[in-house]
Length: 284
Ligand SMILES: NC(=O)c1ccc[n+]([C@@H]2O[C@H](COP(=O)([O-])OP(=O)(O)OC[C@H]3O[C@@H](n4cnc5c(N)ncnc54)[C@H](OP(=O)(O)O)[C@@H]3O)[C@@H](O)[C@H]2O)c1
Image 1 (spheres, rainbow, N blue to C red):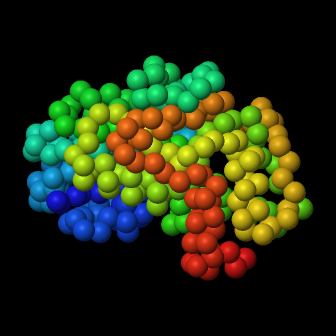
Image 2 (cartoon, protein in one colour; image 1 turned 90 degrees about the horizontal axis):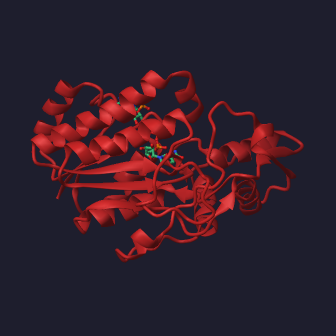
């Protein structure tokens, strides 16, 4: 199969390209194609002629989206619509990566794909617009919602925690938001396997289990052998611009029914820390 990965320079995109052996994979960064430009996109996808387009490109700055909603909607809403429209026009299948932030967090049990969405912030609303565009424009699609991504190719939450813990006597982390950390390497292999099985529809992909950001941070420091104390704080104390769901755990049922189960988030943290060490990223 020929697979076009749009967003190959991003945190997930790097791992998608790395993990996707055995197929003809064409990586596309924002320098190769801007999804806001439908003419450029049509030319690019026509030239590449893929069986599947995997859309991992997005505007992912959650607080930045509050300051700049036009940009969030231009990329995540209109840009996604462009990709879906061209994929359909050229008869290509589309895999869209979405987010737990389409939910409002009022639930007390893991969200299923069919649960009603109600984003609390601009980023979530723009990704929800992307989901609608995929459903409206294309006939052969898969939407995979995921959450709390971390990967070694970019500076994500756990690396920020390690850096902060290395130079501060103690660190403070939010303890009243619950979700499922997801290692981009594990997500990438799940996406590859779903595409290979020609899956369609909407589903949820995360590492197994759930925790707060506070518990996530403590696990990262434990695995890295760092003793810096971590203090729990509330969302209100963290004073971030964008509202975030208090609970955004995604149910694994839609994934396990397709024969895929991801390891626990704690095991994934161990693998991540080992990868950081191997890359020499913990030598500060
Ligand atoms: N990060 C998370 O915690 C999280 C959680 C849930 C879901 N997701 C979703 O997972 C996917 C991957 O996220 P990620 O964290 O890997 O994102 P990321 O590291 O921010 O990478 C996104 C990529 O999209 C590219 N891009 C942005 N605007 C573009 C445009 N107009 N045209 C073409 N490419 C463009 C960026 O290129 P430049 O860098 O060159 O601008 C970047 O390489 C996204 O769909 C995101 O919404 C992420």
